[in-house]
Length: 526
Image (cartoon, rainbow, N blue to C red; front, side):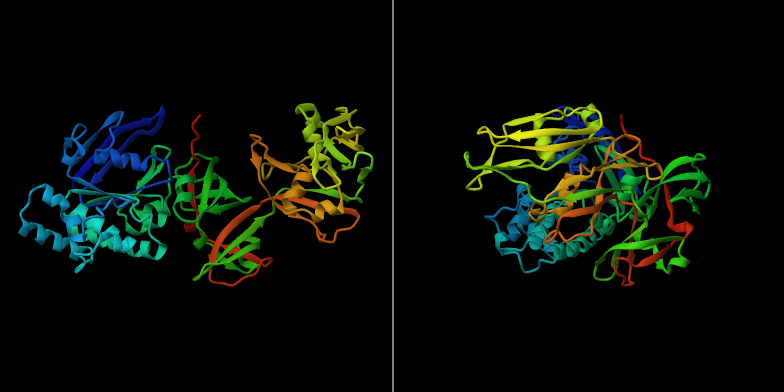
């Protein structure tokens, strides 16, 4: 095919922020090319530079062998269809389509011929006299496309033109746009963040991220052979796990070495391993190359989507001590006050500047008047030291109402899991039945009361605690001690299957070498 458009080292900034970082891209005649990426990745900026609506800071745009950097938008053989169709509300369908031809002072016979051909092309025969404001969203979009195509441009730019349509209409228009492009035989350049649109319509997909191109390829290449984890996550559903390439055609992940079809990596190179959900087969536990437990089931109409945990996460168990309410009533001041004994991490006292508000929060200290209006705790006095031991803290109001509780300073045992590369900690805590019963989100509150947190052992970044297990009924809990277990997510695979399974079922997962795709690790900019 003949090269039609060249972007050469295109750089563009807005208010000092670089949104295009030296983009190089070739587009060929009669291609349907999709620029795909999240909001802010630079795809619309690149489209507007090609259309002549923006000027790049650096680089050159070549169109049909000629530099068009200084050519104004109206002189470029390029038309654009935007998400907001910008139709003229005072003109009917026919006159909207004919507008550009009238600007060119074309004869009425020729205008009628071209407009009627466009109406036929976009399946709007008989709609010429309709008011455009009375049309559906899909019909308005067809008018916008016809108006752009009637001028016979060499290239049609489409900036998320289906974004305002509902799902059913969007799918219909995807097929229509591809049909129209094939019939008129010109280059379409389409901008979207919708992966399904890109896969459905494109001859070539350009995946963009933060102002740069991550990968260029056909839909099949992009889906089956993503260049990195970013592309794999953006195109289709993905299971991506850390692995190590032991040798050509052999990769290790999930504590096992698997045969694969990839080669050319360094020995023992850290890699990302991709397995698509549809490539995992659910079998009996003894027949799978992995075994796991079904954690979640969602019915998707033609298949079930399972979340199967093959390896448990990192966990920490603590004691929740439920004690009776110990409100103190100051009848003279007409106030009540309460607080709980609490545990505190000696490392937190050593490394963090613990404030009075921190202690109020940990102790769940509060005061209120006889009309149940909350009062401020203005006095916090304590003898807490950084060394382990039992200390006291007193909370009080302006009117002298106060309560004193115990503070247990401890060296907690952190759970460090080198295999998962995760650390987790949590503290025993005291709580009253009333506080538990008043909780609106018990799992979230349990994490707060226990100061539960998890982190990455390599870089100390935060890791989400996804599971909180307990064996009491929050609505009827009584005094006593209860175990609470906080866990991070283990290794979970998303699986698509037609088999109906239930949460808690034990299953095997099977896959072959051709179902494994090994990718180089993404390079993170400093």
